[in-house]
Length: 287
Image (cartoon, rainbow, N blue to C red):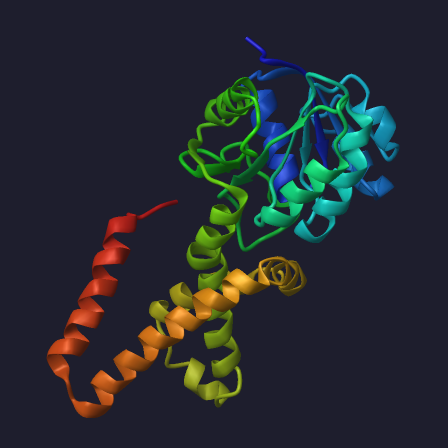
């Protein structure tokens, strides 16, 4: 049974299109409408079974929508939320899929009026090193975690409703403050990408014939470095201070391990390697 009448997807990229596909497949709403900036992309949406209406006019998309999901790139979500909130009315639920939350939630709070709908930040920890609607999948969210970041005074029923929404898409729900969210993802998402890219950049300066001797380990380690550089730059800019802090902590750990190696402290180095192996095994195989 649908839990929303009309869901608006703002930005039909990988996450937006995957969300629309999943919502339609699981019959979560009666109608799906899509907003985008490029007419050719909207034409593609109109041809899809998961899109009932698509338009560049934001007001047409917002009208009648009781759930609005902002799926634009992270650097534009804050501006988009600031534009959306004053146009909403009571009972409308607004969320996003951005990977940084403090600045977005602050903007939503400042842009809201007494007559506005309710904004609750969402971060579905789902995605790919690939981007674009052509790589969308209705199963993108299955088994993944979605972090919700409601303000302290957010009505419980709104959080419960959004929890139900993401849960119907097969996601596990975690609730954190916007600040705590940004600290968590700086360590478990943004830092790993930074390190994979750093390794790739370092090896790109080494002789090309060396790469011919590489194995699967190098491909596994650098896989996420294939992600769009411009997109990741905006993510890192948006979470600059917390990513910088996580790099400081990681650099300290690396320096300790380097000393173990330099001094031949093999027991300490073995424990360092074992701790890493234990963490990796605890993560499971994933998808």
